[in-house]
Length: 462
Image (cartoon, rainbow, N blue to C red):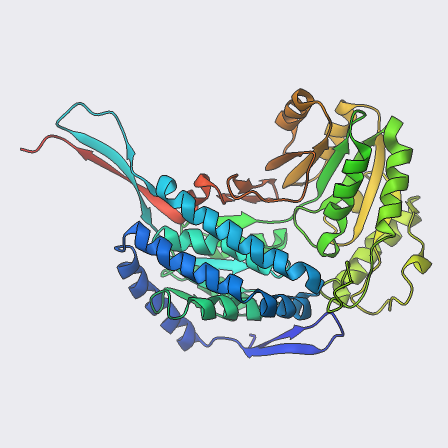
C-alpha cells in the first residue's frame, strides 16, 4: 500500500514533489464533505453555478506562468507550450459552461393540455475524475467543470506525475466554490480502486491506458454507475493522391511529435498514396530534423524528454524491433547529439519500410516515432487504418470532401479529421471506438454521463 507519492522530474531524474497519500480517514472526510456540498449545490440556480465556475476558471488562467513552469518540471513538456494548455483549459471550460443551458434544459414532449410530460437531467451526486499526466489540465477539465455545472460535487485524483495540478486547481476554487464541493485526494492504485467502489461515488471518468481502464471497470463492477473511459490510441493518417503535401507534412509532423508524441490522439502511423510517397517522406524527415531536443525549461526547446526513462526505453524498443525486422530509420543518431540513452530524452524517429507485422504500426507507442507506408488506393488505406484494437481518431488529407465522408463512414474511430489532426473541439463529442474507451465527454452529449434522466408524466390536476 502506498503511503507517499513522488514526482520524479524527467528533466534530470530528481525528486520534484513528494506528498503523503490520503489516509482512510482523510478520504472519508473528503467524501462526506462532498456529499453534503452536492446536496446544497444542486439547488443553486444554473446561472449561479455558471458565475462561480467562470470565476474559478479565470483564476486558473491568471496563474498560467507559474502553472506552465510546474508542468515543465513535472512532466517535461517545453515551457514554451505550457500557456497553450492553460489557455485550452480556459477555452474548453468556458464553452462547456455556455453549453450547459441547452444541455441541462428540460426536454418537453408534446402533451395535450392540461397534462404535462418532460424529461429532466438531474445531478448524480459526487463525481470522481481520475486524470493523467500528459495533458493534466486539458484532460481534467473535460469532466470537472461540466460535472460542477450539472450540479455535482467533484473529487479529483490526479496522476502521481502531476500532483501539483490537482493542488493548483483546488487552490483556485477555494473561496469561490462552496467548501467540500471540489477536492483532491492523492492516492495509490489500491486506494483509488477502493474509491471507485465507494457507495458515495456516483460516477467516474478515467483517462489513461487500456490496462488502467480495465482496472477501473473491475473496481466499479456491480455498482451500476456511469464510468467514462478515455483510453489509448494508435491514430492513423491517410494522405490521398490529391492532398496538399506541404500542409499535410507541416501538420502531421506536429501531430506526431508535439508533447514528445505523448498524446492519446497523436499521429502514430501514416499511409501515403504511392505517387506522393517519396516527396512526402523527404519533407517529413526534413521538418523533423528542425526540432530542438533539450531542456524543457529553455524557451527555445521544441522537444522535451518523455515522462520517464522507462518510457523512453519502451519506445526505443519498438524502434529497434522494427529496424531488426527490416524497417529503415531516417533520423541518424548524430542528428540529435548528446542524448543520454539512460535518460528520459529520446530523439524523434521516422521509419519507412514498415508493415503491420511490427508493433510500432499496430500497438500504442506514446512517443516521438512514426511509421510511414505507401498505399495503392483508398481501400488499402482504409483496411490498414482499421487494423488496430484502438480507435480514437483518424486523419484524412484530401481536397475531396465527399471521399473523406465516405471513408469516414467506414473508419472504426471516435473522431474523423479532414486536413487537420490532434485537436479537440469542445462542441464535438470526444469519444472512442474499440479499446479506446467508452462514453463521451465535451459537447452537449458530454453532460449525459454526468447526470441521470428523470421522466415526469403529469396528468391534469384532480
